[in-house]
Image 1 (cartoon, rainbow, N blue to C red):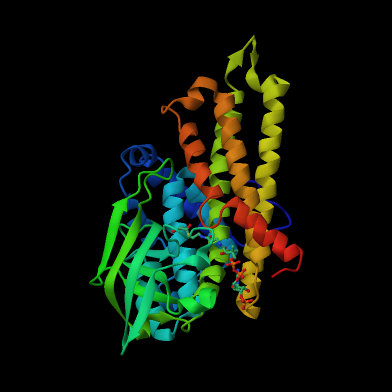
Image 2: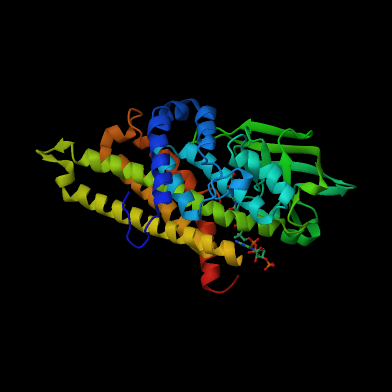
Length: 389
Ligand code: CAA
């Protein structure tokens, strides 16, 4: 990757980035195509990533994490995603959607109990907001939690839960007072072994096929009241705050995919000959590479900017929704653009499963959809610019 002078990296940043790159090249690259094909969850490599501290990079050491900053997180994630976006999203969900929210809103006991096993790589965490009828319109959820003494009884159906089939713990958002709409949502920490919680079928997917996605079905699932994250009625704000962090992770996933596709296309353009020349010597290919490279570096700047804004927000409890949404919007659309062009530059070989370029193309699409579609990112950005929220 290019080292941009305006973001000088510390030695710790470089060491973590290099460790992630090394691990990705040695351990993930040889198995990525096979796990994409089979759709099997890559438990062994995920476990090793946990042991290396990649599942809780910003989590303080006292809760089993690496105790580093937001920039460190995106640097390491970028290297993993550059090799395999499936491993990348599992890492992103553990770090951002799961650990980040509990660290920010959880009690001391909750942090110890629910963050430590995930950050130290002994267990997997997941985040569950979406329902069959409420994706972008997240406030329109129907699943309910009703208080009964020291417990809440959870009922309903959640969908599109990344790591749903394998996660040990979940952050789940439920309606506790439907009359209050968004202000009636509450967040719960739920043990995956809870009675009354079952996992639906694993979704067959176009891309990120080695990451496991499923529904969650709650049928009179009893959760202790001490497992409420934050306060009753604060759940929607918690969900949105956590998604701001998550969106930086998905932007980084998009960046990694785009970089991998770009490097493959650049290399191919320097070797493949047509009409007596290397195809990179034709302006049609050269200009494509120029646009791909420029958009990748612009994505990187937006992502580093968002990571630094997130780091600052840790001290002043501020928001960085604008920075996170701009990074996700631009990086995900860049990933689609770059992977599309990379397939085109490779011609027939770009369409073949013999090379990973077609996998990059399939993996890129989800970055424009999950953790807020591009349309939702445009909504967040325009509302912020117009002072509407
Ligand atoms: N941080 C803190 N508070 C926030 C916030 C944020 N980022 N965004 C909104 N809020 C607050 C608002 O200030 C408002 O509070 P007040 O009423 O006190 O002012 C409250 O939340 C409600 O906000 P809105 O009126 O803006 O709510 P809305 O219903 O209009 O929704 C939205 C806004 C941006 C469209 C939001 O619903 C949204 O982001 N939707 C997309 C959801 C999404 O990304 N889903 C993906 C789920 S995860 C996934 O993909 C699967 C996986 O496992 C990876």
